[in-house]
Structures are given as structure tokens and as C-alpha cells.
Image (tube, rainbow, N blue to C red; front, side, top):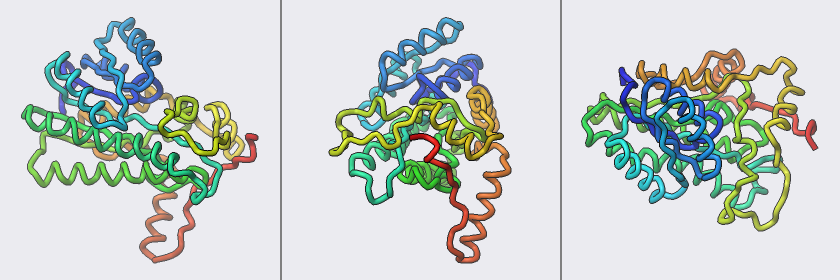
Length: 298
């Protein structure tokens, strides 16, 4: 997609964090932006914020775990702007951690996979056929994480599983587009970072829907962003924070330049990828897991 101005962008999880930064960046590029989010109050506030900056933004309350809700998002987009050219499947949650993989409840698995995996799948299923029918340039960006997308962290196993799935799904999307001659539609997978990101991801537990309620309530893993930054700084005093605007800039650049891997250079990530590759190549047991220190926060 060589030109952004005048085109239409849809961003899920768009009312905060990385999603909001992308909406703002696309609007600054002259795009018409549809901001989708599950929290109505946050959505209204963010739409007002960007409209106050003179950007063309429409908000649509969307639950990405429901195919019919994503389809309604598409209908609202087409009704308002007449087309769609860029879709960022960005909505995501972290279900909390600090327990063994086998101790998670079925609701923990279902919530995380419904949002982080099916939310991406429903975005692809709904919007790609529209892009194909338009016969115009288009692009899909799926948000993953180095946690799972590169290698798992010990204390967030379900999240890691979901983000590994997003990488594979994105690769399959690009493969299917290219093998079907749909070169005018691009695909990217976004690894935000490389530093710490100030987002609402860590606080998803506070708005966990009732349909995903645990049978036994627990507060383990109920951190705020400040808690998590404290944990990470204890493990790495030189921890860097990546501005969300920097992530959004990378996305806009990748879309225009048809770049699949939105993966900023980072020595730790590169070393982890090398170790993982060598472990697989040599059929050697894994030694590349990423660690953090949960004992810093009680």
C-alpha cells in the first residue's frame, strides 16, 4: 500500500496503548480511522481526543471474540467510509500469570485465546474478503509479542501460546495471499518494543468479562503497569521504555514498504532467536527461555 492518505484504517483495541498510537499516526497521515474497542467509555474519550486534534475518527464498540461483532464493525466501516484498506488486528489481553501451566482454569485459556487468537482470525475472516472484492491495495497488521512470538516467558504461558499462534497465522495469511496472486494485499506481524511499553495490557484483569469468570477467584498476577515495570527494572536496571508513537511509526512504514516482519533490532531478541534456532537445529533441549522475577511484587 504505497499511499495512506485518503484510505480507511480499522484498528481493534484502538482506544488505548499501541492501538491509540496507531489510530493517531494513521490519522496524521490523512487516513480515515475506525477505532474499535470493547470499553465504550474509553472509546468515546479516545475518539474525542483525536477529533480534537483535527483527525477523522469514528468509534465502534466491538468485541473481537464474537465473529458477529467484528462483522458489525465491518458493516459500520463500509457504511461510514465506503471501503477499508488497512486492518490492524491489535486487541489483546494478558490473563495474568504466576501459576503453573496445569493450574490455569479453562476460563483462563478461553478468554486469552478468544481475544488474542480468535480476535485476529475473525479480523482476517471478515476484512480480507472485503479487500479482495474491492480490487484495491490493502494491508493487514497482526499484533504479536516477543513473549511467545520469539520465546516464552516462564510466568505467562497462555499469553505466550496465543502470541506464538499469531505469528504462525500471519505467516499463513501472507502465504495464502501470495499463492493466490493477491499481491496487492500485504500482511505484517507486529512485535512491539523493543523496550517496555506503557499500555493497558497488564491491567486487562480489571475488565475481565463475566462470561470468562474463574470458578475460584484469585488475585495472583493482578498487576498494574507500574508493578510490571518495577519487576522488569529489578531484573534489568537499564530497562528502556519504547514510546508508543515509535511503534506506530514502524507500523506505518511497514505498510507503505510492504514489510512483513515489524521487528525492531534488539540484541536480546536476536540472541534469543539464535539460541532457539540452534536448539532446534542441534535437537538440543531448550535453553533460551525468558525470565523475570515475580517476587519483587507481592
